[in-house]
Image 1 (cartoon, rainbow, N blue to C red):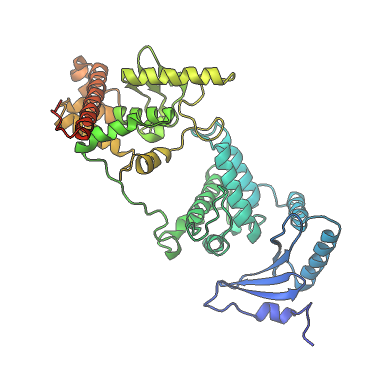
Image 2: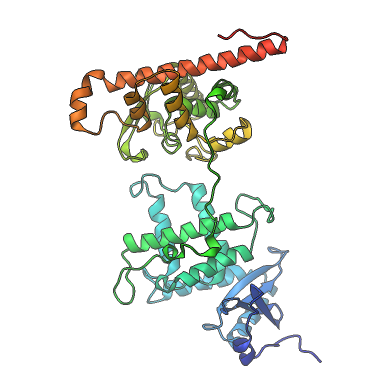
Length: 461
């Protein structure tokens, strides 16, 4: 009679190999206990169970075969089944045991992968450490990647010096082979293949190693600085095309009237003002998303942006068209009325969550999904240059200063000779003339629509 429990033996656990055409092989010992053999021939124990908390089933890792023998795995299985009968969740119990074991370990301090991860998260959320600290939502997503994909593989308790290039590849492969519902709630696993999650996990692992090397100054056993294994993955077929994005072009100059008209019709006031500001000032999206009310001078009609929010690391002031100043003032009044805790340090353009900034991907989505153009917000800078050069015949110097986010020439000699032209006045006129041009083209487009509906031909404005 075929055995239903204790099917495995020590020789079988050690000698059985995973076929090359399979990602992994599961050997059942019985009563929910499996030995999982990966394509790389790594072996680890997994226990599957169902409970009220996990009606669809849940896996809990017992560790690798190297640290947990067949006998020990069976003892853990018996313990897990007893916990289930007592109403205790095995996964939570064993995770708690792991944490206690780590904390009691003599070698825990700064070498455990889990500890370095926690230190990285603390560092990245502290405003005094970084210019753009992680938001609560970003932290939540990173925690989900860690808990769902790194912890189950058992590497969280490993020494960070043991995490090699091969281990990182195995971590990333695990993501593709073990898809689960995303933190955002998206669960279409055919549409969301896991490569996006894999890219985020790769970035997270790299950040943890950079923190270990440059901030915590962790050394390898031989005394050399710790290496970042992610840097060794360049050219790996697994990552081919991971960050390939279609390069979106700017809209055509001939479409500017229709484009500006559609922007003016955006129903969401915040989106409308963000897009109008982006087009008319040519600010980079990365800088504009982090604007706060203390940077906005209503009376001087200017944004004064600190160096830490500028790509070139230099503080910059940009003029703002009159109409946009009025719209910004409206937004500010609305915020004050609806928020007793309003502060000047609050973001002008809010994100989805409290105290979060505008999402840098939001402008691209507006352009593609609402305005229906195959372009990006970065293309606004191309428009700014092309239209001001070819149609407004503006000064090349003022155009370049506005695009370079510079208040003056980089050369002291050039500044000395050109100072009389007054950079600020020329840039203020440049932005004002450009905004008037946008309004004129939008009005022309609206006139064409109006007359075409009446069956007439519009007279150019």
